[in-house]
Image 1 (cartoon, protein in one colour):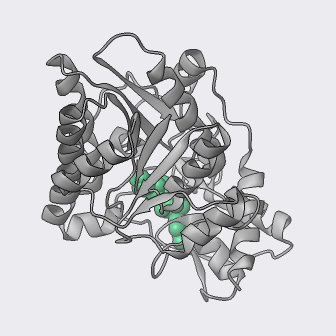
Image 2 (cartoon, rainbow, N blue to C red):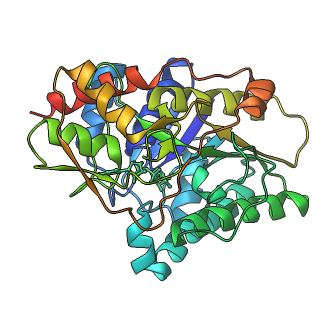
Length: 336
Ligand code: WQD
């Protein structure tokens, strides 16, 4: 089976390319490097022993999409290509709506024209905002989005749901990721944030590597056990394998029009201080930090109810937060 991976040179995309190949699929990468690096392809070659087919193209061009779907005899698509900075999305709403919605709509049109019905969409737990019940389930009513980025994910999910409700020949999952961390254990691929990392774990590893001078904990006055925010940190390889299992389920789905949303997390929550302290243990480099002000838009606690994906696919995260931090640190050290 041939699988088009848009954004396949990105953090989650590249790890999913590895998992796809190891599961016997043939991944084809389409990525314009707007938020990824060509060196990722060398890392993939080092892990896989070959270089997956690659198209350095933009995912909004309908003709390019149709050409790739046909020339590569694509059977299914995993759509990662999107802008994902919460902060930037609040400064550049139009850029985010145009890209994140535009790429999905172009892809859906191209898939319809080329009779490719299987799609995995990269969504995010950010659609939940501050959940009223924990662990948060897919049945939770979605609040008004807390960011433009979150709004684009909510709208994309609605586009998929409406397409299927209209009876279009589309079988799709929206996977709501919690907090991806870590790297492939080979340290050949990993997270490559551009500029100052927004996310906690790459900021921690860059601080430990001496790239960042000071680690700030954004608030310790939240209603949690130690006052710092709680998140569901899932190893990126677990997340990658969840995509493979989701794809297998779509190929086995006999309904021509099918749509489901699934959380992809560990079901466990950990605080910022737990992450920092655990990193100190696994790296042997205890980190100093300062307590700063809360970051705008942060919620206190969120972690996943994973009963749906477990029941539907038999999938569960196998790797813990500790292993994620070990692999993230090994990757950071490999960067020199
Ligand atoms: C985690 C916790 C911070 C950095 C974001 C996006 C979400 C998804 C995952 C795309 C928070 C705290 C962080 C630092 C800190 N991305 N923190 N000091 O905000 O849960 O989710 O990334 O889909 O959409 O919103 O992840 O890693 O940014 O923050 O104290 O230097 O770490 O306040 O409580 P977040 P994060």
